[in-house]
Length: 350
Image (cartoon, rainbow, N blue to C red; front, side):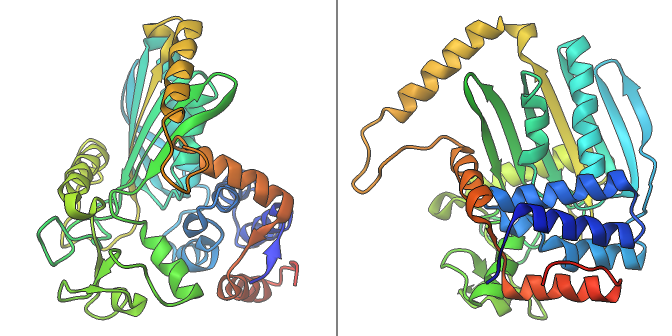
């Protein structure tokens, strides 16, 4: 696998988006979202999306370049937006910033969005609110499409991966950042495994009959396999959380919950920003959360464990490593990106 710097990946992806007709802002926002995902170790939401998702969707007209984000409903504390099928990262960034603006004046701000394309890694958007001393909760579904997860006790897919993220600012350190799918893994991680080994860990997927399998090709067969809800023997918890995410993201936004007759890919989005200062003095909040985190991390460690990590901490550590040593990119992914660059006569690194 090639090892490339974040700067090379950023320059390459930005040039390709511009060659495809994206504006400077669109190219910058989408590229940053992808490369940031790679930097923190979420390769399933990184530059692999360029050849597999963004380029085909631009070429087919699924992504509307320069789309205007419209307001469908609004009050001082909430808004419902129509993304008009623009770039997901552009729309999600706008939604979080609007929620923060509303929370600054009204204690809490909530925004729901329909007709947004793939937003990628959620955690990066939640951090926008944390930078403003706010707590952020963000959920998305697949806009009614993307059934690839079986319900607890079922053998047929009825849900999308229905991820959620929550960012909480921490004093003197990186925010606490929960960023997870309600399936055992994000579907993109199966694609990464296909590019790397062709084998999935046990407990990830079932084939089209509902039988557990480790063969990644079973997930992409016709009829397809499916992911399991997270939780293992307690997967009813992941399943229940997935239902909540689907309703918040789909029913409130107007995008719709997962259904059999929807094939248009996209994301319904729900975001809430909570202004901490409206509830408690910031120093008081910081002191309590810092004490709590230190208490949790001070627990006796299991054999072989050197440190207890809070959510997001591993990703921030991984960013430091990859900024220093570079980002490993699957050979198949890089070859696909180079093929796109050649087709659009864009010069990128070999």
